[in-house]
Length: 461
Image 1: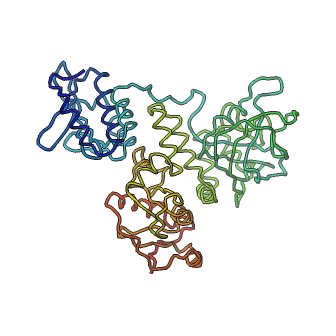
Image 2 (image 1 turned 30 degrees about the vertical axis):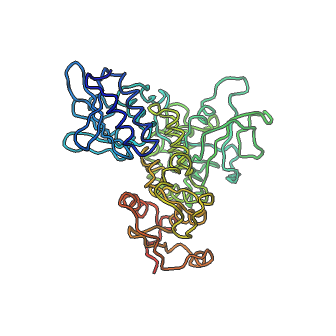
Image 3 (image 1 turned 180 degrees about the vertical axis):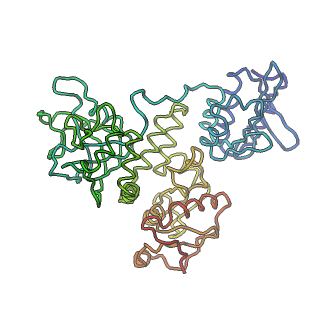
């Protein structure tokens, strides 16, 4: 509802004060949607040079929220009286909007687009359903065990598991249903010949596919029928585990139903893919003595090893607190497209290393990796740089980074001949970065740079 202090002329002046169309759309979203739910009274206000919207409880007169109108964004402030309305509290606000800040009892967040404004309104006024709870038949462990039917063949070249959709008589099979429950980033323990021989990481969700040729697929007698295909990247263990040798330790932690192995250490041939409960996972981690952690890290370093990004994308797609348009922009940002690309182009104007300015030939890269960024950080133009494709590869894989003053940092793992062949001469200064960009560069230097081979971080000299 409109406050008695509502002034159309002042509202129009507030909107005209905004310099970007996206910020104006965010402003319109607050004006249009913020008036209705929750019974707040809304009014444009101005105190000196400060332009704002005020949201009050009409019954008590309590100030619930405020919205400061800047030239390029909106600073939305949640007052103490309104904080109980924020689903999930400040922690949830921080997760969804990376620049959320707490000061003097108020919570504040910067809003740049209509999607962000609608997302915040949904969080405050519960206009979207609560996130879905995990299914009752899962424990959320994110770990699986696969028994390969052909014990003497362990061919991972196809990088996938396959199963029928149901038993031959049409009845449901728990192992086959599990194919549809696995998510990107989940761990898969692979057994064959009485040994735990490999570990894998799920790359994508299962999709419908015809039964592929080869002995390492479930064969129930049907020929080329449609089933479930689950992309998994495997890595052989240097020290496989002979299951019978550790049967006594595993017996106490095996699942009560659909266990992939028996208490004796023998494989259960009736089970293809089974969930690994947390207690069993803990024992396997101990028995593998570091092989699990190292293996998952090595799998992530393979070319195209973006399973962590795929896992983050799946979590976004499953969220119920985001509008579809917001989800689309977050997913597009993973590939340097959409709103993220436009925001980066407002900050960066060309490739800092090659000096190419034609944006048709440049890619937008996140500084703080997309999978690690909050919703707002995924779209923040200051969290991106424009690069020629070959430079994009070096930056994304951690072969290069930048100091805050623009000095190019080169990992020991990068062959100097690569830079020479690409015409990148050292030393190189790429120009100073904004303070907002420097915050993201700290993360890149700590989490990405030099991680491809464990090389130490060095500046190019």
